Image 1 (tube, one colour):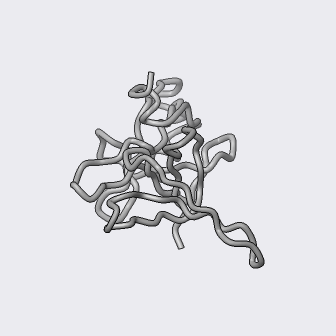
Image 2: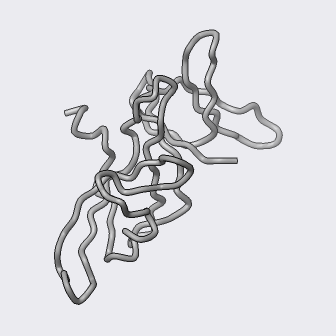
Image 3: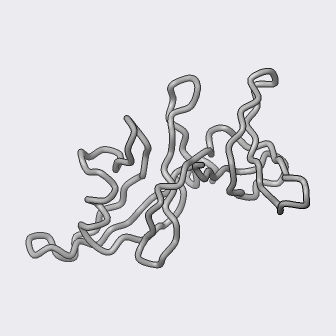
Length: 137
């Protein structure tokens, strides 16, 4: 199963778990497993904050999440924003800040032809926030 992340509607807390879409209510929920003996918790999340785990980590070992397409075809903006300092000999020290997105069955760096793995190999990458942080200010 895939791990998702989203921001709760009620208190704006970020939660990780399984994404559930209720098409009758047209609402998105995050299901968070508690234990084998307890019931799972469900929280309504803001659809635009939905993102999916890439399975990869930044230089600080923090899991990277990418924005995903929503039902209406628009891209969510809950994915991470990465800042990468180049380590190659031709552009050593150059800083690039880009968004991580999921598109066409793989993770990409928005605005480039680079895949996420290629971007991570480019240099020392750090998560500096979520794509939606700017919109919430």
